[in-house]
Image (spheres, one colour):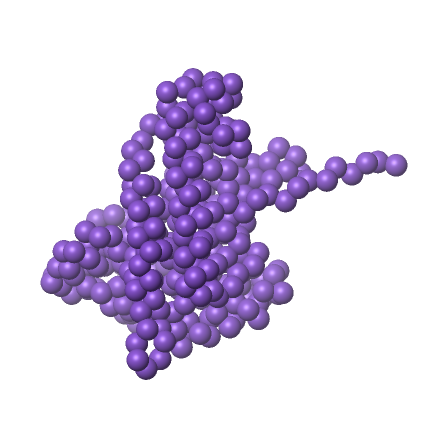
Length: 312
């Protein structure tokens, strides 16, 4: 009788969006059932992750195989993209409830466990996302707990990365330098691929997250009529400057695509960021993107959340 080898389920890493969005190193499993990973710049091996944030976008799309759903989850550092596939009917009722609440104008906090996915472009670029395994709407206290956990996990990887910079790039040397054993393999792969880079933006993200965790008024603002969620995820500099709007928001978006599209399109977050920096609200930017795509037809969305000018 052949003995079946049991493979343990990968731990769900606590992970902020910025670290995951910056990653462009996949590691395929060697065997048929071996897990695959996305390796981040500071050494996280991401197969499964627990992520959180404000629901920022939800769409249902129809295919020959049935309905599938794509969505955005925004944390203090950026945006996670996730999907519920057509072959996951057990999640469809729950994601439909999320969709209905979102389309009614409600905004709320969620936690999601997802499996890492990535898409590689012809020019060598890579875009990361998650396939949802489970998700839930949560209250402020649970979200605050996740912010603290994700901050601690990110800081641990940052400290390990900085310790590794004074070491030779091999497991024995990294262990002697104080890199935790569970981070060594990812650190070897990360440093061999990414080289040296400035980690300050990750530390800023931790500070923003902990600031949000300790300031409840920043996470949730409750109007007197109907409870809604407002989460300030723009950087402190952007909020402090609060420039007066310059130019039409649609023109800002179109100009941003003209300047930044290198053939693969410009991502949703970059467009919204450009509009906010020009003094427009996030809501106006989102509405303008929808209008340019669905009404005016000035832009197209060749793949989810990436936009190009409509060919003439």
